[in-house]
Length: 88
Image (cartoon, rainbow, N blue to C red; front, top):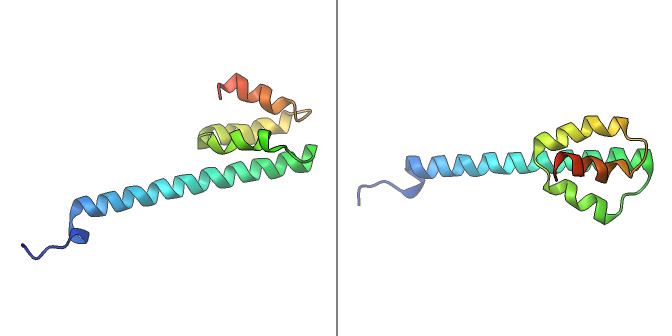
């Protein structure tokens, strides 16, 4: 009609960029959760699926806090306790 394709519109570009940013955020969250699992596994032994699963649902700032808090854990039992305290 006007010689403009959908991909050339501002709305399309904004939606595309928003999708990219969401993908990056999801990737950062997943990597943070995986790193925390690796650190906890190295320190305390294998984590059950029940302990791993909730980590992937945590927002990135909470995962960042957990990455520091786990340095003070004395056992794997500290993980569910910590999660209850932060409300997740």
